[in-house]
Image (cartoon, rainbow, N blue to C red; front, side, top):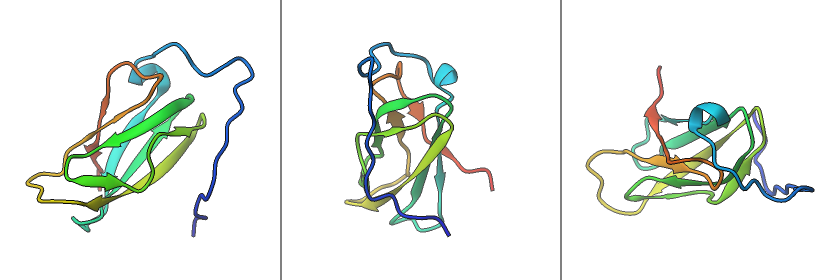
Length: 108
Protein backbone atom coordinates (compact mmCIF):
# COMPACT_ATOMS: atom_id res chain seq x y z
CA UNK A 1 0.00 0.00 0.00
CA UNK A 2 1.20 3.49 -0.80
CA UNK A 3 1.77 6.27 1.68
CA UNK A 4 -0.40 9.38 1.74
CA UNK A 5 1.45 12.58 0.81
CA UNK A 6 0.89 15.13 3.58
CA UNK A 7 3.28 17.87 2.49
CA UNK A 8 5.67 18.70 -0.32
CA UNK A 9 8.26 21.41 -0.82
CA UNK A 10 10.54 22.30 -3.72
CA UNK A 11 13.70 24.39 -3.75
CA UNK A 12 14.31 26.28 -6.99
CA UNK A 13 17.88 27.67 -6.66
CA UNK A 14 17.72 29.15 -10.18
CA UNK A 15 14.13 30.34 -9.76
CA UNK A 16 10.85 28.75 -10.76
CA UNK A 17 10.54 27.40 -14.29
CA UNK A 18 9.85 30.39 -16.56
CA UNK A 19 9.73 28.63 -19.94
CA UNK A 20 6.68 26.73 -21.13
CA UNK A 21 7.11 23.39 -22.87
CA UNK A 22 4.76 21.08 -24.71
CA UNK A 23 3.31 18.00 -23.06
CA UNK A 24 5.61 15.75 -25.11
CA UNK A 25 8.74 17.50 -23.91
CA UNK A 26 7.59 17.38 -20.27
CA UNK A 27 6.30 13.83 -20.66
CA UNK A 28 3.09 14.91 -18.95
CA UNK A 29 0.19 12.44 -19.05
CA UNK A 30 -3.14 12.31 -17.21
CA UNK A 31 -5.44 9.29 -16.96
CA UNK A 32 -8.79 8.74 -15.23
CA UNK A 33 -9.13 5.67 -13.00
CA UNK A 34 -11.76 4.21 -10.73
CA UNK A 35 -15.24 2.91 -11.18
CA UNK A 36 -16.74 5.27 -8.58
CA UNK A 37 -18.44 7.98 -10.65
CA UNK A 38 -18.71 10.23 -7.59
CA UNK A 39 -14.98 10.08 -6.78
CA UNK A 40 -12.83 9.14 -9.79
CA UNK A 41 -9.06 9.40 -9.54
CA UNK A 42 -6.81 11.26 -11.99
CA UNK A 43 -3.25 9.93 -12.22
CA UNK A 44 -0.81 12.57 -13.47
CA UNK A 45 2.71 11.49 -14.43
CA UNK A 46 5.62 13.56 -15.73
CA UNK A 47 9.15 12.82 -16.95
CA UNK A 48 10.23 16.42 -16.24
CA UNK A 49 9.28 18.89 -13.50
CA UNK A 50 5.62 19.89 -13.83
CA UNK A 51 5.19 23.11 -11.83
CA UNK A 52 1.87 24.45 -10.57
CA UNK A 53 -0.28 21.58 -11.85
CA UNK A 54 -4.04 22.17 -11.80
CA UNK A 55 -6.79 19.62 -12.55
CA UNK A 56 -9.89 20.93 -14.36
CA UNK A 57 -12.90 18.56 -14.46
CA UNK A 58 -16.24 20.40 -14.60
CA UNK A 59 -18.60 19.30 -11.83
CA UNK A 60 -15.77 18.00 -9.62
CA UNK A 61 -13.40 19.44 -7.01
CA UNK A 62 -9.86 17.96 -6.92
CA UNK A 63 -8.42 16.75 -3.60
CA UNK A 64 -5.26 18.79 -4.33
CA UNK A 65 -4.59 21.74 -6.61
CA UNK A 66 -1.63 23.84 -7.79
CA UNK A 67 1.01 21.24 -6.88
CA UNK A 68 4.25 20.20 -8.53
CA UNK A 69 5.36 16.78 -9.74
CA UNK A 70 9.04 15.93 -9.56
CA UNK A 71 10.70 14.37 -12.64
CA UNK A 72 9.85 10.70 -13.14
CA UNK A 73 7.02 10.66 -10.59
CA UNK A 74 3.23 10.69 -10.53
CA UNK A 75 0.42 11.95 -8.33
CA UNK A 76 -3.09 10.60 -7.89
CA UNK A 77 -5.78 13.20 -7.30
CA UNK A 78 -9.25 12.17 -6.16
CA UNK A 79 -12.14 14.15 -7.60
CA UNK A 80 -15.23 14.88 -5.51
CA UNK A 81 -18.52 15.45 -7.29
CA UNK A 82 -19.97 18.92 -6.68
CA UNK A 83 -22.91 18.89 -9.05
CA UNK A 84 -24.63 17.15 -11.93
CA UNK A 85 -22.31 15.81 -14.62
CA UNK A 86 -23.26 14.17 -17.90
CA UNK A 87 -19.77 13.07 -18.94
CA UNK A 88 -16.60 13.09 -16.84
CA UNK A 89 -14.07 14.97 -18.97
CA UNK A 90 -11.28 17.29 -18.11
CA UNK A 91 -7.79 18.57 -18.58
CA UNK A 92 -4.61 19.23 -16.65
CA UNK A 93 -2.59 22.44 -16.89
CA UNK A 94 0.73 23.53 -15.37
CA UNK A 95 2.51 26.86 -15.16
CA UNK A 96 5.37 25.49 -17.29
CA UNK A 97 3.12 23.68 -19.80
CA UNK A 98 2.03 25.09 -23.16
CA UNK A 99 -1.70 24.49 -23.41
CA UNK A 100 -3.38 21.63 -21.57
CA UNK A 101 -3.31 17.84 -21.43
CA UNK A 102 -6.63 16.05 -21.83
CA UNK A 103 -7.48 13.57 -19.08
CA UNK A 104 -7.74 10.25 -20.91
CA UNK A 105 -9.67 7.22 -19.73
CA UNK A 106 -7.40 4.51 -18.31
CA UNK A 107 -6.69 1.52 -20.54
CA UNK A 108 -7.88 -1.38 -18.39
